[in-house]
Image (cartoon, rainbow, N blue to C red):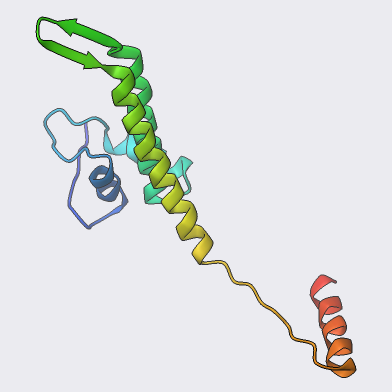
Length: 127
């Protein structure tokens, strides 16, 4: 049963920070499980954390449901919804970070010479 958490060092610790699963006693995931989630999600920390939260949410929904005992009430569905919203936010952040690395270009055409040059360069790019 491996558990490691060193803030700021390593992918596993980064996922643990985001889900949160930072305490060894009663931790949710083993290191091997987090490694598998990271592998599934292409070693992107926020996507791995989102998958971990989605896993916790589905487990919570299946186990807790709605329980009322005296003055204590637990609602697995609401907890699950909150976890899924956090997972969706992490996935959106990962998508935004992926999009910022995109490179695009624009070519200006001023006259017939630059128009022919643009057509020539486009032909080189395509084929």
